[in-house]
Image (cartoon, rainbow, N blue to C red):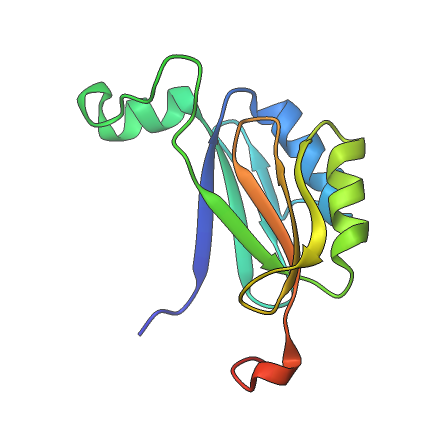
Length: 134
């Protein structure tokens, strides 16, 4: 049984990334030490930020070879009450707009941006009429 879920983003600059997510989530990290920052949401979800140098040291250079200047591709899909607010906040803090909030083929209203470390963030309001989500 999974007891907690945490997504860890590998970041170029831990301090800059911490500031970005602190402003985006409007919450202080529960952990912020050299090598790891953690933000925990009331839902039990946690986002960790680890410097690229830290993950290379932890698992070894041979297992971690992203493209030059790019971090590994990932999308973090966050369901929120007001996706426009989150998308606007992310862009205000340095994210790049990919797609504005709109109704998507699967029914959710979602907007996309790329954070300061090239991770794709989606802010979505679930389609409550599909019967699959609450």
